Image 1 (tube, rainbow, N blue to C red):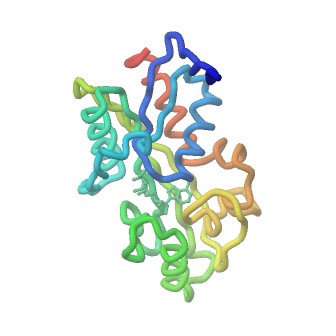
Image 2 (cartoon, protein in one colour):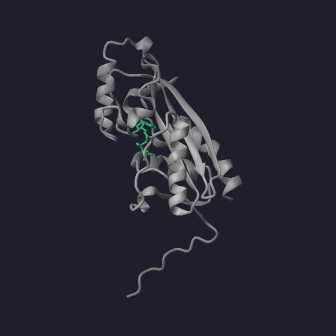
Image 3 (tube, rainbow, N blue to C red):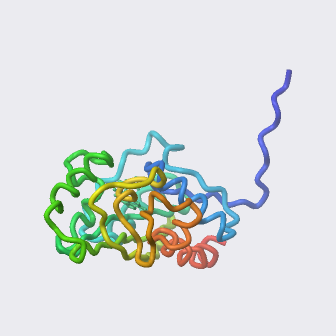
Length: 211
Ligand code: ITT
């Protein structure tokens, strides 16, 4: 018996999301779809043969551009990437670009969160200001690049709350909220988040440069 033919995506340009973070991929799909971007969005996991990029930059923007350029060069397709993290005022902006590897193991969200909470255990509520930051980059195979940024301001809880999101979401309470990011619905988080802001700003750039 014949299988169902694969859908033909007429006129649809493929856009690579240069990330292997499952939490980010889910958010980026929702944010870009809600913004009406008419592109086929494919995660970097579709290209397992392409090695991970070393995040050698010292700013979110530099690392986002590194990731986007690497995927655009390797695939010959336009690529978007983000570099993001949590910046804590009393730690002078740390973990910052080291957010994904704060405990020493890249991507161990629980260990990263536990270490940060332990480091801040003696810090009172009024000194627990922090923000999520995100740089969103677009790179084309010809080397063209653009980068934009977004921020979500808030304070850090003493104990985690909520099951949604990923990373440090259970301890970041956005300004004007009584819930943590992990207690917001996905739509509520995307509407205010650093990633939502940055990628909504990138959409017109993608429309202009990719079509
Ligand atoms: P890729 O490089 O493959 O995109 P990554 O997880 O290594 O995935 P980053 O280098 O940008 O991504 O690190 C982002 C880290 O910052 C992430 O692992 C979380 O710990 C934290 N983070 C970023 N955005 C977040 C968000 O919306 N909610 C909670 N934590 C977030």
